[in-house]
Length: 126
Image 1: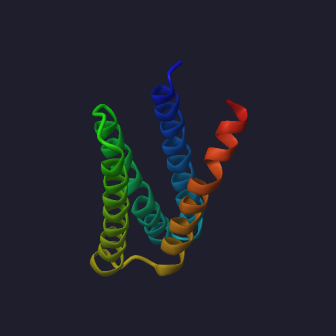
Image 2: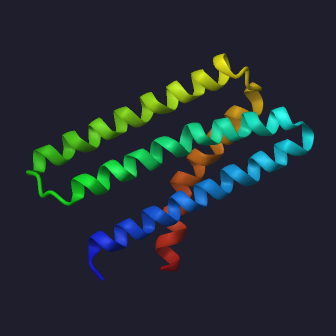
Image 3: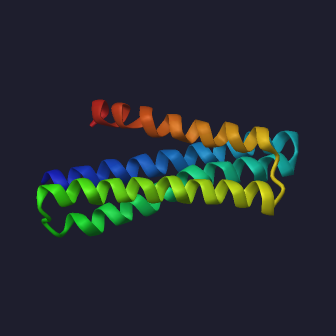
């Protein structure tokens, strides 16, 4: 199996685990109040959706073989776009949909923690 396929496989597993975390946390907050569940789901999406777009962006640019300097700039651009997209989604959820702050932030942070911890678990299993 090539390294590029292995990287894509791990990325898909990571995105799936993150989505499961978003759904589980939103369902738990839904037990308190459906509005809290919706706010939690919005917070999770603020962390998950930019990751999905970044992975698609990375896969599209992986097919090309750019020079080494261009790889760093492409990665940096992708990370900046992830942060901006996450910020925009959080602002829309808070200002536009009047989301509850606590479940929104808790879920957002939880998905970020999953993003950090899950690759180590996936790599140790696989």
